[in-house]
Picture 1: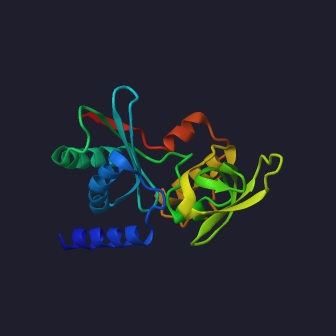
Picture 2 (picture 1 turned 30 degrees about the vertical axis):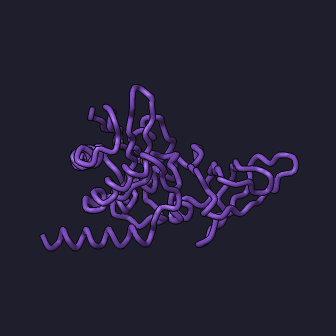
Length: 227
Protein backbone atom coordinates (compact mmCIF):
# COMPACT_ATOMS: atom_id res chain seq x y z
CA UNK A 1 0.00 0.00 0.00
CA UNK A 2 2.86 2.32 0.90
CA UNK A 3 4.54 1.67 -2.45
CA UNK A 4 1.28 2.45 -4.28
CA UNK A 5 0.98 5.76 -2.41
CA UNK A 6 4.59 6.63 -3.20
CA UNK A 7 4.00 5.85 -6.88
CA UNK A 8 0.86 7.97 -6.96
CA UNK A 9 2.66 10.88 -5.28
CA UNK A 10 5.59 10.61 -7.69
CA UNK A 11 3.29 10.53 -10.70
CA UNK A 12 1.36 13.51 -9.40
CA UNK A 13 4.59 15.49 -8.91
CA UNK A 14 5.73 14.69 -12.44
CA UNK A 15 2.35 15.72 -13.81
CA UNK A 16 2.60 19.11 -12.10
CA UNK A 17 6.12 19.63 -13.43
CA UNK A 18 5.00 18.82 -16.97
CA UNK A 19 1.47 20.20 -17.23
CA UNK A 20 -0.36 20.36 -20.51
CA UNK A 21 -0.14 23.63 -22.40
CA UNK A 22 -3.10 22.73 -24.61
CA UNK A 23 -6.25 22.02 -22.63
CA UNK A 24 -9.90 21.31 -23.26
CA UNK A 25 -12.87 23.65 -22.91
CA UNK A 26 -16.54 23.09 -22.16
CA UNK A 27 -17.70 19.51 -21.54
CA UNK A 28 -14.29 18.16 -22.57
CA UNK A 29 -12.70 20.15 -19.75
CA UNK A 30 -15.19 18.74 -17.23
CA UNK A 31 -14.36 15.20 -18.35
CA UNK A 32 -10.63 15.93 -18.17
CA UNK A 33 -10.96 17.17 -14.59
CA UNK A 34 -12.68 13.91 -13.63
CA UNK A 35 -10.40 11.42 -15.36
CA UNK A 36 -7.00 13.07 -14.81
CA UNK A 37 -6.71 12.20 -11.08
CA UNK A 38 -7.77 8.61 -11.84
CA UNK A 39 -5.11 8.33 -14.54
CA UNK A 40 -2.39 9.65 -12.24
CA UNK A 41 -3.15 7.06 -9.55
CA UNK A 42 -3.02 4.30 -12.19
CA UNK A 43 0.35 5.52 -13.48
CA UNK A 44 -0.77 7.33 -16.63
CA UNK A 45 -1.00 10.90 -17.86
CA UNK A 46 -3.76 12.47 -19.89
CA UNK A 47 -3.01 13.51 -23.45
CA UNK A 48 -6.39 14.64 -24.71
CA UNK A 49 -10.14 14.40 -24.18
CA UNK A 50 -12.52 14.89 -27.09
CA UNK A 51 -16.29 14.43 -27.31
CA UNK A 52 -17.53 14.09 -30.88
CA UNK A 53 -20.87 13.43 -32.53
CA UNK A 54 -19.50 10.73 -34.81
CA UNK A 55 -21.38 7.41 -34.62
CA UNK A 56 -23.75 8.85 -32.06
CA UNK A 57 -21.66 10.39 -29.28
CA UNK A 58 -18.07 9.22 -28.78
CA UNK A 59 -15.88 10.27 -25.88
CA UNK A 60 -12.23 9.73 -26.70
CA UNK A 61 -9.72 9.65 -23.85
CA UNK A 62 -6.15 9.62 -25.10
CA UNK A 63 -3.52 8.70 -22.51
CA UNK A 64 -0.07 7.21 -22.03
CA UNK A 65 2.28 6.03 -19.32
CA UNK A 66 4.78 8.55 -17.98
CA UNK A 67 7.51 6.91 -20.06
CA UNK A 68 5.41 7.29 -23.22
CA UNK A 69 4.40 3.64 -23.62
CA UNK A 70 0.86 2.31 -23.92
CA UNK A 71 -0.61 -1.14 -24.51
CA UNK A 72 -4.04 -2.56 -25.26
CA UNK A 73 -4.10 -3.89 -21.68
CA UNK A 74 -3.39 -0.35 -20.44
CA UNK A 75 -6.37 0.94 -22.43
CA UNK A 76 -8.60 -1.72 -20.88
CA UNK A 77 -7.35 -0.85 -17.37
CA UNK A 78 -8.09 2.83 -17.89
CA UNK A 79 -11.53 2.12 -19.32
CA UNK A 80 -12.50 -0.03 -16.33
CA UNK A 81 -11.45 2.67 -13.85
CA UNK A 82 -12.57 5.93 -15.47
CA UNK A 83 -16.00 4.63 -16.50
CA UNK A 84 -17.33 4.44 -12.89
CA UNK A 85 -15.95 7.91 -12.14
CA UNK A 86 -17.73 9.33 -15.17
CA UNK A 87 -20.96 7.55 -14.17
CA UNK A 88 -20.85 9.19 -10.73
CA UNK A 89 -20.21 12.76 -11.92
CA UNK A 90 -22.19 12.30 -15.16
CA UNK A 91 -20.72 15.27 -17.13
CA UNK A 92 -22.28 14.15 -20.43
CA UNK A 93 -26.03 14.16 -21.04
CA UNK A 94 -27.33 11.14 -22.89
CA UNK A 95 -25.62 7.94 -23.99
CA UNK A 96 -22.10 7.90 -25.38
CA UNK A 97 -19.41 5.46 -26.44
CA UNK A 98 -16.20 5.60 -24.37
CA UNK A 99 -13.03 5.10 -26.38
CA UNK A 100 -9.62 4.87 -24.70
CA UNK A 101 -6.54 4.97 -26.92
CA UNK A 102 -2.85 5.77 -27.12
CA UNK A 103 -1.67 9.04 -28.72
CA UNK A 104 -0.52 7.16 -31.83
CA UNK A 105 2.55 7.88 -33.92
CA UNK A 106 1.27 11.17 -35.37
CA UNK A 107 0.44 12.22 -31.83
CA UNK A 108 -0.94 15.50 -30.51
CA UNK A 109 1.71 17.72 -28.92
CA UNK A 110 0.22 19.00 -25.68
CA UNK A 111 3.20 19.44 -23.36
CA UNK A 112 6.49 21.31 -23.57
CA UNK A 113 8.23 17.94 -23.26
CA UNK A 114 6.39 16.71 -26.37
CA UNK A 115 8.07 19.37 -28.48
CA UNK A 116 11.41 18.46 -26.90
CA UNK A 117 10.93 14.71 -27.39
CA UNK A 118 10.06 15.07 -31.07
CA UNK A 119 12.47 17.82 -32.06
CA UNK A 120 13.59 17.43 -35.66
CA UNK A 121 10.24 16.11 -36.87
CA UNK A 122 7.47 17.83 -38.82
CA UNK A 123 4.50 19.26 -36.94
CA UNK A 124 1.28 21.08 -37.79
CA UNK A 125 0.45 23.92 -35.42
CA UNK A 126 -2.65 26.11 -35.20
CA UNK A 127 -2.74 29.28 -33.12
CA UNK A 128 -5.52 31.25 -31.46
CA UNK A 129 -4.16 34.53 -32.82
CA UNK A 130 -2.46 35.68 -36.02
CA UNK A 131 1.34 35.35 -36.05
CA UNK A 132 3.27 36.67 -39.04
CA UNK A 133 0.02 36.98 -40.98
CA UNK A 134 -1.40 33.50 -40.40
CA UNK A 135 -2.72 31.01 -37.86
CA UNK A 136 -1.68 27.68 -39.40
CA UNK A 137 1.90 26.46 -39.60
CA UNK A 138 3.72 23.35 -40.75
CA UNK A 139 7.41 22.75 -40.31
CA UNK A 140 10.26 20.95 -38.59
CA UNK A 141 10.67 21.51 -34.85
CA UNK A 142 14.12 23.06 -34.60
CA UNK A 143 14.21 24.66 -31.15
CA UNK A 144 12.17 25.08 -27.98
CA UNK A 145 12.38 26.70 -24.56
CA UNK A 146 10.04 27.46 -21.67
CA UNK A 147 8.23 30.15 -23.68
CA UNK A 148 7.70 28.71 -27.16
CA UNK A 149 8.71 26.48 -30.04
CA UNK A 150 10.58 27.35 -33.23
CA UNK A 151 9.76 25.59 -36.48
CA UNK A 152 11.32 25.74 -39.93
CA UNK A 153 8.64 25.70 -42.62
CA UNK A 154 8.97 22.96 -45.21
CA UNK A 155 6.39 24.56 -47.52
CA UNK A 156 7.19 28.25 -47.60
CA UNK A 157 4.58 30.41 -49.31
CA UNK A 158 4.90 33.93 -50.66
CA UNK A 159 5.40 36.41 -47.85
CA UNK A 160 5.85 33.72 -45.20
CA UNK A 161 8.98 33.54 -43.09
CA UNK A 162 10.81 30.23 -43.26
CA UNK A 163 11.59 30.18 -39.54
CA UNK A 164 8.99 31.24 -36.97
CA UNK A 165 8.83 31.07 -33.19
CA UNK A 166 5.39 30.39 -31.71
CA UNK A 167 4.61 31.10 -28.04
CA UNK A 168 3.04 28.14 -26.24
CA UNK A 169 0.22 30.26 -24.83
CA UNK A 170 -1.25 30.93 -28.29
CA UNK A 171 -1.12 27.32 -29.56
CA UNK A 172 -4.64 25.93 -29.92
CA UNK A 173 -3.70 22.64 -31.59
CA UNK A 174 -0.49 20.86 -32.52
CA UNK A 175 0.37 17.38 -33.76
CA UNK A 176 3.12 15.51 -35.54
CA UNK A 177 2.99 14.92 -39.30
CA UNK A 178 3.23 11.26 -40.25
CA UNK A 179 6.44 10.61 -42.20
CA UNK A 180 8.72 7.63 -42.76
CA UNK A 181 11.31 9.19 -40.43
CA UNK A 182 8.70 9.67 -37.70
CA UNK A 183 7.50 6.06 -37.96
CA UNK A 184 11.06 4.78 -37.81
CA UNK A 185 11.98 6.93 -34.79
CA UNK A 186 8.72 6.16 -32.98
CA UNK A 187 9.25 2.42 -33.37
CA UNK A 188 12.86 2.72 -32.26
CA UNK A 189 11.91 4.76 -29.19
CA UNK A 190 9.11 2.34 -28.28
CA UNK A 191 11.48 -0.61 -28.56
CA UNK A 192 14.10 1.17 -26.43
CA UNK A 193 11.57 1.81 -23.67
CA UNK A 194 10.13 -1.68 -23.68
CA UNK A 195 13.60 -3.25 -23.53
CA UNK A 196 14.83 -0.92 -20.79
CA UNK A 197 17.20 1.08 -22.96
CA UNK A 198 17.77 4.79 -22.60
CA UNK A 199 16.18 6.61 -25.57
CA UNK A 200 18.92 7.59 -28.00
CA UNK A 201 21.15 4.59 -27.34
CA UNK A 202 22.38 2.74 -30.42
CA UNK A 203 20.63 -0.56 -30.99
CA UNK A 204 22.59 -3.64 -31.95
CA UNK A 205 19.91 -4.64 -34.42
CA UNK A 206 18.32 -2.52 -37.13
CA UNK A 207 14.59 -2.12 -37.52
CA UNK A 208 14.80 -2.23 -41.32
CA UNK A 209 11.90 -1.21 -43.48
CA UNK A 210 8.70 -0.34 -41.60
CA UNK A 211 5.56 -2.09 -42.77
CA UNK A 212 2.00 -1.05 -42.13
CA UNK A 213 1.65 -3.87 -39.59
CA UNK A 214 4.73 -2.66 -37.69
CA UNK A 215 3.31 0.85 -37.49
CA UNK A 216 0.01 -0.49 -36.15
CA UNK A 217 1.85 -2.51 -33.48
CA UNK A 218 3.46 0.69 -32.19
CA UNK A 219 0.03 2.12 -31.36
CA UNK A 220 -2.26 0.70 -28.70
CA UNK A 221 -5.64 -0.22 -30.10
CA UNK A 222 -8.81 1.59 -29.12
CA UNK A 223 -10.82 0.08 -26.27
CA UNK A 224 -14.41 1.15 -26.01
CA UNK A 225 -17.62 0.55 -24.15
CA UNK A 226 -21.10 1.99 -24.09
CA UNK A 227 -22.19 4.31 -21.25
